[in-house]
Amino acid sequence: MLPTHALGGMALALPLVVVAPEFAPLALGAGLVGGIVPDLDMYAGHRKTLHFPVYYSVLAVLVTSVAVLVPTGATVAVAVFLLAAALHCVTDVLGSGLELRPWEGTSDRAVYDHYRRTWIPPRRLVRYDGSPADLGLSVTLALPLLYTLEGVFQWLVLGTVAVAAVYTALRRRLAALATVVARRVPTAIRPYVPKRYLEDLDSETSTTGS
Ligand SMILES: [Zn+2]
Picture 1 (cartoon, rainbow, N blue to C red):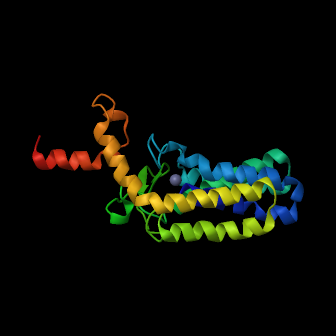
Picture 2: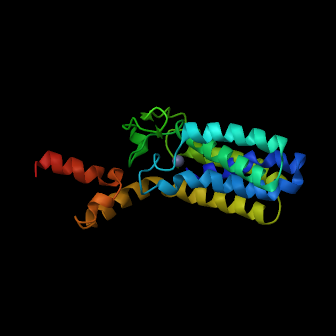
């Protein structure tokens, strides 16, 4: 889920707190943003439009090499941003597929690979986003961050864990709510609604034959 990705991105910046503390705040911010940005495609080609598992990874390796050789605010920030975005896209593969109720495990699409022009199937090591295991992952990532950071960043981590806990508690109810909302969407707007929210309507239409 998004909070886990956000915390993962920030965790990538943690070594800088020790190695190059002058870059740490910038890197933590870049890691947070990089962990979030791919999911800005949530309602427009989710896990495809802004998810680039191969390209983010290749760029991350290149820019990180540059940042190590020429450490400036800009190189470090871009490197951590790309590393966080790459980590986000690669770890999405370890979760569930792109479907309204991912705990049912019916989708074979985890993340789109633009390089091979194909969908990568989900590995389901974490059964679905917002599962108890996912929350456990969020908390595990938050612990070293809370221990190391202070001030604004510490509050940011606590806030993110709180969002993760609420999302996990409501995850299944949110899927039911999405179906109810999708039913009320006017037909003219329906083409703009992501397909996964219309799964129930589609199956009802096909069973009733209307
Ligand atoms: Zn994602």
